[in-house]
Length: 182
Image (cartoon, rainbow, N blue to C red; front, side, top):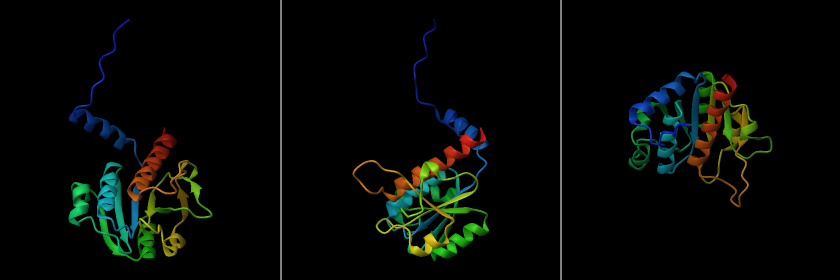
């Protein structure tokens, strides 16, 4: 019986090779709409996560803080240069732009018709819309979206930080895409 080799962290070259393999197995496009997400650290965190999951485009809506804000830059670590982003417009215009670019737009919000995230069809070209830290998605955004989804929670807290919720939704969309294609 051979002894297993010790576990070690991947070297930067190994990480690049691993990520390249995942990129080759990823067909679906991802995009985001950030409606009135004003916390610069949230914006920066979302941009960094978006770059990690291969998001192509981010539309800012309402009074969203741009990633050029110095505090957003501190968290984003320059990842805003790795994707296309558009300055804030009204929410319905952002959804219209996403539709014109071929995306199905799904709001991440607790609504009467929202499906749990793991039951929502998140394959294909998806644009996930998230709303303000305190008030969530506006009625105008919800009316313009194709569907809504939410993250089931079993703890004693009723909501998640917008950057954390966005990361979970992006990861689930990629998981569904990879699972359905293989």
